[in-house]
Length: 129
Image 1 (cartoon, rainbow, N blue to C red):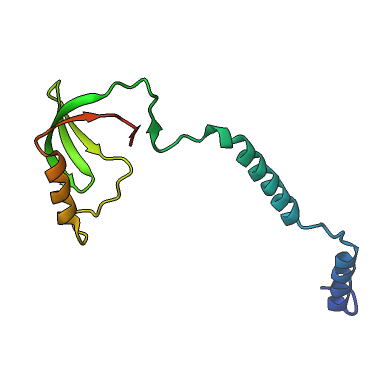
Image 2: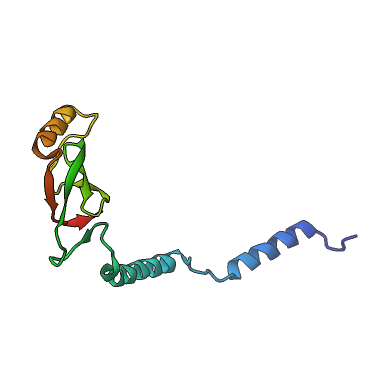
């Protein structure tokens, strides 16, 4: 048994005294945010030179490829059979023509067909996707 006259009151007072003497610790959140900001800035600066383009640009030293057009895919894409009997899918640079399912897509395909189908062509590669 407990010998104190009011044991519950003593316990409450002890807890209250413990809570008032406890040192207040600052939150680590601002420190983490600052560290994250500094790290992301450093990575952004050093990572700029290492980006690789999605398209590869060819130099002027590339020889033209000669062949015959054997197919028209849509208004800006053709199939060419090279002199080595290799089929090459060619997307014509700097042309924005409608695709097959779009309005005027069939007309664009017909117009390109009139220009190059079953004719000798010379391809000068600009980029490779």
